Structures are given as C-alpha cells and as structure tokens.
Image 1 (tube, chains in turn orange, purple):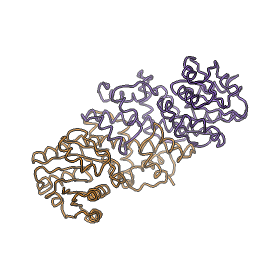
Image 2 (cartoon, one colour):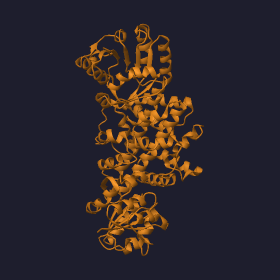
Image 3 (cartoon, chains in turn green, brown):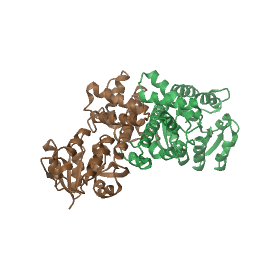
Image 4 (cartoon, helix red, strand yellow):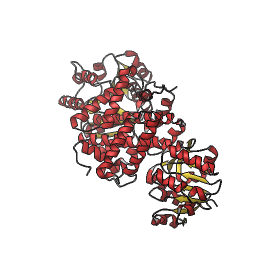
Length: 295
Length: 295
C-alpha cells in the first residue's frame, strides 16, 4: 500500500487528506495544531507529531502550507522532510508559494534523489471536500506520471503545465484572474443595486452569457446575502497577489487590472478585513460608492 | 400567424431573424444595406425597403441596431416605427443603448398604446446563430410574458430583470464584466508566456477552477492563435463602456477595474484597432510588456 505523509491539515489540507484516506491510501498526517488532524484520523488516517515523522517511510510526501517560508522550513530545515525522505520519494508541494522558491526546492530535492513537484490548487474548500480541485503541476514528466493517481483523488482537472515552478506560475495567473473577477462582479453588483435592478435575476442572466464566470456561479449569492465567511481569506489572497505582482514585475509584464485588484485587496486587508472571505471586495466597492454594506 | 418586423440585420440581427423565421414566425426584415436581408429571405422571411414597412401590420417589432441614436431615429422619426405601429404592438429593442433612452422610449411608446421592452443580449455571434443568447429584459411583466415565446427562440436564458431600462442596466454590467474578464485573461496569458509556461494546458486548468470564465472557454484559443476576427468589435465595446462609465458616474458608483478596462479599450481603438474583436486587448498587453504580437 502507498503511504502518504500529509503535512498541513488546514481548511484545504484536511479534506484533501481525508479524501486520500477514503480512497484507500495509508495517510500519515501532521499539523502544527494537533486537533486539526482529527478529521483525517476519523477517516482512517494516522496522526504523527512532527513533519519528519510524516515523511519517514512514506512513498509520497504532500505539503499544504500557508506561505513560502513555511514550505522552505518544513522541507529544508535540519532533520526536515528532505533529510529524512528516502531516495525516490515523491515530494508534492501543493501550497501556493513563489515560483522561484519552487524551482529552488526542486533542484535541492533532486540533488538528494527526491522527485519534487509543485502542484498548487484552485477550487476552494468546496472543491477540496468534493475532490474536484483544479491542480496545476510543475516538474518533470515521469514524476508527474507517478503522482497522477494520487492527485486524481483530490482533483477533477489535473494538468502538467511545464517544468518545476510552472505550477506556481499558473497558480499566480489563477489568483490574478480570481481577484479581478471578484472585483468586477462586486462593481457590477453595486452598479445594479444603485440602479434598483433585481440582482438575483441579473446574476442569473449575467452567468449565462459572455460575462459568465465561477464567481457569479459560486459566490454571488453569498455576496448578495452579505455573508463573507471564508472560504479563502483576504490575508491569503493578498499574499498570493504579492507573488503575482513580483513575478510580473520580474518578467516585465504589465498587469494593469491585476495590479489594481492587488491594491484594492491590500487596502481591504489594511482596513482590518483580512480574515473575511476574499469576496468581501464587495464591501470596499460599497464603501467607495458611499453605500452601506449588504444587509 | 404572428408577424415580426425585424429592423437591423447585422452580425447579430441576421442570425436572430433567421432563427425566428425557421421557428415558423412570419418575419419581415429591413436593413439599411439591403443585401444583408438575403439570409433571412433564404430562411423564408420577407424583405422590405424601410423600417416603417417592417413595422406596418406587424404584431411584434424588433430593433437590433448599433447605437442609441440609431434606435432613437428609427422609432421616433416622422413616419417611423412609433408612428406606423398599431396600438398593442410589442416593440422590443434588442440593441445595446443608454438605459435612460430606453426609459424615454418606453414612456413615449406607452403614450401611443405600444408595449415597449428593452431586451439587450449577450452571447456573441455564435450565441445568436445557436439561439442561445442571454437576454436581459426591462419593461412591464405583461409585455414580458407576451414577448417570451419570441425571445425564447433567440435565447437560452431569458430573464425579466425589472422595469423599463433595467435590461440595459444589466447589459451595461455585463459589458463591464466582459471587458474586465478579457483584460484579466490577456494579462494572465502574457504573464504565462513570459514565464515559458505551456499556455494551452494552463488555459485548461485555469478554466476548471475559480478563475473559470466564458472568455477562457470561448475566446482563449483564438487569442493564443492571434486570431482577432470579430465577433464583437472593439468599436462597439468601446461604445458600450461609454454607457457603463456614464451610468456608474450618474449613480455615484465606483468601478475602478471597469473604468480602467474602459480606458484600455479606448486606447486600443485610438491606436486603430477598432474593427478587431474585443479580445484584441491581448495585443495591447503584449505591447505594454514589450512583447511582439501573438504569432
């Protein structure tokens, strides 16, 4: 049986690990806050008390952590994953981190005989629960083929997009589009309210045409209800947009709408809304338009 | 048999009128350039030589014209549609025009006993050909109910969104989201190219997650091929974004991304690209990023 060490059982990681256990994999979970391993244990997984213990003796190690420094520490620290994993182990980082760091980690892991992939995801908590994430994978083709049966349990769309770091680059593009789309939907919703249009019906018809997008389908109803329970927090999207703007700047790519969306997301966070769902961009457009918050 | 006068048989109007004729309606078509009525005639419709002739004796009159002044002239001029249509006639303007003009036309038509609806569409030429447009309808509920069997032939999503003008308001919101979404996809595509990612595969995975939108589904392939054959011309989207920004300004609504997208669309047009498909926003991001055009 394939043993999978799963490190990082947060909002996304927990349901992903549960799905792997349910699919019959031997899943060994570690999380800094130990109570978060309980759903995995309930699904038949095992609980360990360190990242190294999750990696020891595992065929596959998956990391799902908040930010670049977390991944760097867990993989590279003295006695960390790269020290204890045996040659040939697949190390799949599914966190959203800097593409340049993913390339460095692939190099450092390769030097030790490990097979390292960057495989960030999109689709949110519901996608993680349903096993229907989009997974964008960077790394070599053989490692991707080896990882595919594991990734298919967690994702509905699992695509190899290029060499190490490419998964993170595509995820950065994803986060640019998502932030911009939330902002556009927010602007449209405030515009419609100001003109006294039935917004529920408007969302229905907007979703059916060329304006159709996943934000209208999955988030507009909660936005209209003023429900900004995360979901995906402003804090994390703000972090991701820092990656996007830095990577665009390094490559000399102009992202006018992306950069403006990043500014607005940063402003929302600066006003104390970092722990709301990213769809709370609506609140800011309401403020900027002198309108009270939804409901 | 219901007779429908159809005025304006352009890229969108022609296939819409053809679908009505094919569905068994008696369709009487007028277009300023007479040759454009031929597809309707081939589908069993009739050709007349003036807007008034299309409206005379028709139970329903549909206008599908480029801009506000065109609609105003055809409906209100001496001997125009409002002069010759008999009381009770349904006048359905499916053009994209200013919401305030739609309200005025509904009032003026109502004063003469006509039932006027604003019913702009989204979905592009392909949606028109397939009879799968999204149609957003403003006007009173009885007139909407009377028009529904006709609109259902042309649209897959036909929604009554509110009183006169509401259809145009929702269409304005639609055009805001579409312009912004094309721009976001353009920024993402240039970003991915600059980082040497396989863009076809990236589009596949982006379309499957929270970044998913109709632009990725329907336009990204042509954009990657550098094919900007309209479709929907920059000139027309620029006109629509003028409606959006004016209507937002009047209502005091902040549309930061929408306004920036309008600026970029205007710039694209000012550089001589008005007759390209609106997805040519990609060309501008390539220029701004110092990269040669696609292909």
